[in-house]
Length: 198
Image (cartoon, rainbow, N blue to C red; front, side):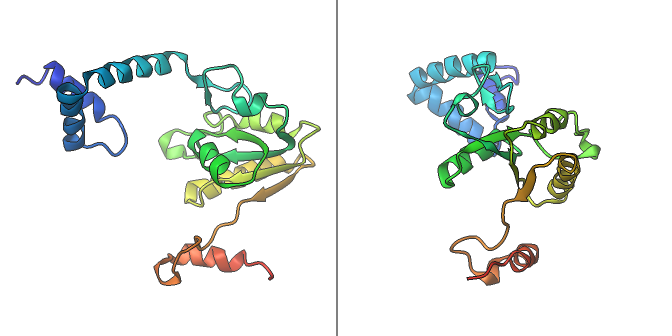
């Protein structure tokens, strides 16, 4: 089999997905070709349409095939709350797990000068404009507590300083059902620092 064969191209193309190594990609390719070609054709059609038609919401920067996403277009959402997240997948997690009815802003990552990710790439000028909207009362930072995440949170807090809105951060600490002996020191320190009264 030559390296430029369609089969090898398919396997290599599947490897672009996160967590898919050479063996997993090979299994997927063989499964589609040997057992489910109709599913493979459907996957190809949907992937092609998604790549062409899905873009960013003009308001919150999440992924959508419309000018505004369903959340931003929903008049019943609480416009006084704005949750700032790193990725569109964070919105899905919050919507499924939390009782949150506000709006969102998707950064698309964290500040990382070494990787060439600065304020422009994260749309922080657009976020600063949102901070000045009169109906906004609180912005909630839901950013990972990594070094880059903390730097991003600090930068955003400086942007918010000029506005009258309240800036808060989601709690960090011991996960529900977690055992203390398996929790890392940084997480445990955050849990103690953010403890609440009973």
